[in-house]
Length: 165
Image (cartoon, rainbow, N blue to C red; front, side, top):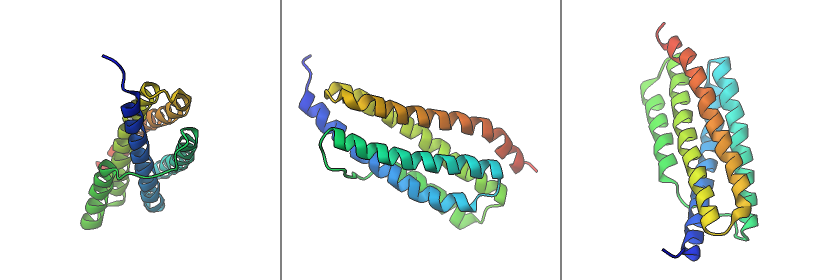
């Protein structure tokens, strides 16, 4: 089967714009969430993730420059749903401090997992569309997302223990 570089490039640009939208919306959400956290460990980790996300947004701008396309955002409905689910729960339930932190960690874990997969797929599309110069930058973001997932996994034990008291 012959490759279809123009189609791969079109999909790459769309997915790049969608992840740009997702990262920007997630950064906005984290800016509101982090000050409301109660656990110092959770606050520190999610604060670091906010800084990581802001760095990824800058990296996405560099990716758009590398492919000579103006930065844009295509709606990421996945991130919209995750943020809305969190906001609806904590806004409607008045959770305890431990529950708020657990919900925030759950949101971040789900986003990190989704974004790691999205960056991995973008990396494949970069190669398929002959935009290999983007691969290292995409891999860096994928690694950051994977690392965040692992850090959250270690923290979840404490977060869930706080719920049981």
